[in-house]
Image (cartoon, rainbow, N blue to C red; front, top):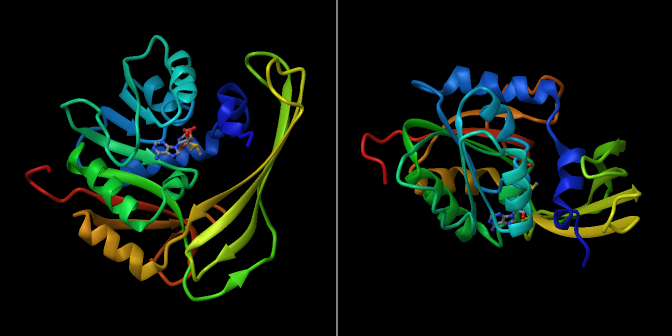
Length: 263
Ligand SMILES: C[S@@+](CC[C@H](N)C(=O)[O-])C[C@H]1O[C@@H](n2cnc3c(N)ncnc32)[C@H](O)[C@@H]1O
């Protein structure tokens, strides 16, 4: 099936974080990180849209992605900045010997993993790459209970936008259903393009993302050796700090590596 992920330059133009998003993530780093911010990693980096603001601030940035096309695009985006880019699975990261101060994984990318065992492997792998006092800033969906919600919900829309390689594109993301029993939601993506060479005029795709009951999530955090430092709700304006409560929805977790000895 066609996927927006097969067109990294289109993804980059449509999904790049805006100035407010960037300020917010920088503020989380300032509020929660012990010590300096010099090395930043994204384990599902896509075209590097979240790494670029940190590279511009003088950080060394490292990205990993399953898709070689995304890694190639990230190389172009980060050209001229100190970086490391690797094709690989976020369950078994190979991001060099030096530890990172902050790892970012926004846009619910952790939900692409197949199950909660894979999430545990991933959390452990990120932690082995993080220095003591370092952070993992990770976005995901917290849903508790049983049953299937079939109400379609619009998640994100970007109107016609210029693509760096030429042409224009728009995108609409929606959640089609949320299956609390099986801990999954289905995402629908509809992309329209005009004059984007090599890209279809329409991409209409569906994929599933993992969701997390709050107690399962707490257990995963503890089992992987992270400490839950803070939770921010992405459902309300200005993203207030909240408790990790049942069905608290779309959240960003700030996890801290507490150990003296990493690993
Ligand atoms: C929502 S995009 C990430 C965007 C990116 N963080 C950014 O700053 O633009 C999700 C990415 O996850 C990647 N991905 C999916 N499963 C993966 C896995 N098991 N390991 C690494 N990357 C994966 C996809 O190829 C895709 O590029």
